[in-house]
Length: 54
Image (cartoon, rainbow, N blue to C red; front, side, top):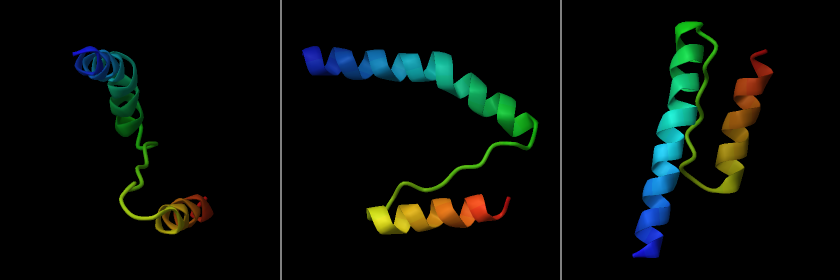
């Protein structure tokens, strides 16, 4: 039961603190996302590809 409470607490914190920032930067066309699916090399490659665009 404690783990469920922790998950809901973290999700609520995300919604209060992170979601507003995502929307703010999306409106300014300054938000970029990278899929976190895959192994570390795949994810790192996606990050490097994105960074190199700048």
